Amino acid sequence: MEEQNFTGSGAGWKALNFYGISELRKDGMMSDPNPVCDILDARGLTCPLPVLRARKKLQGLPVGAILDILATDPSSVADFRNFCRQTGDTLLESVQDAEGVWHHRVRKTG
Image (cartoon, rainbow, N blue to C red):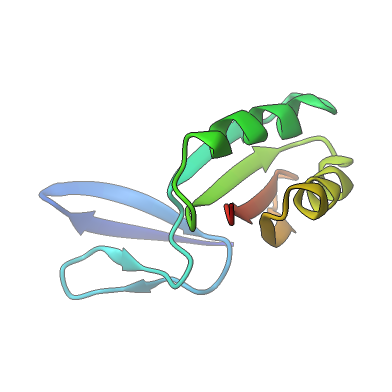
């Protein structure tokens, strides 16, 4: 996990590059082929709550949007894999950071 400091729109902000695919544009904003549209913090929640909250959050997002879910429940890895199989959404990745938090990236497809 790489922590990067950026300045853009006149304010400083930090981005954690968990995926190794972000790059800094000349205007100071990150560019990413899979931009996150929203983040769901499901840390501390256990099955089935992370998936249920992600489902609700995805319903409000447009097709193609990406939801980044933060979860601490180890079973969330299998839960999101199965969730995406059932819904047809795409699980782009599930990675665990140094603090033990899982980052699941889901692209809404329908």
